[in-house]
Image (cartoon, rainbow, N blue to C red; front, side):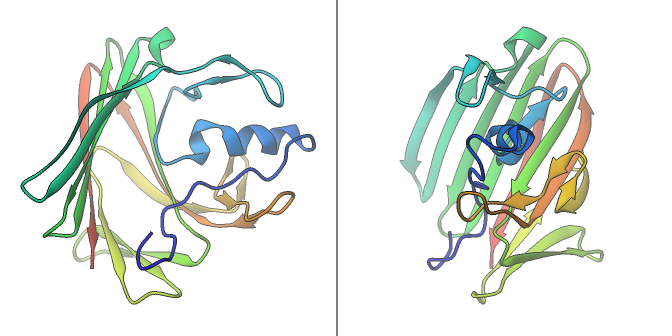
Length: 200
């Protein structure tokens, strides 16, 4: 959030008992600002309120020093396919810059997808001259500049039904289309992806 307005969001719940396909989407990995591997969720859904396997997450390091706030964490949700995902977030206060460093440790090539979900009040444009994405909010004069790693083939998805992607639920049984900055890549061995968000 910037100046009290949401930019990157958790897309919400939408439904508990009705429409199981939508229920699974809104609590699945692709509805969150993270990485999905080989079309697997980080935790395995089993029924409307159950999980047959939950990813174990741990914080490896957390610090505030020299004008930078950072955290490094790992989860084992892809252990069964031989992948370990570590994410480092660093906020450089003086530069208004967030660096997202994802490391995927894997023995064989896998398909990786990365998601950035935006509030419905945010629009996205691609700056061809500079090679980055610009996010603008209806209620803010700020801008977010997304400089994504060349590893990713990137597009914007909004209100897609097959597969479901690009939806936001402001309340129970309500959903509206919203933009998702979506990237896909083939990665192998120890792949590191560095993405930056600049606050302007």
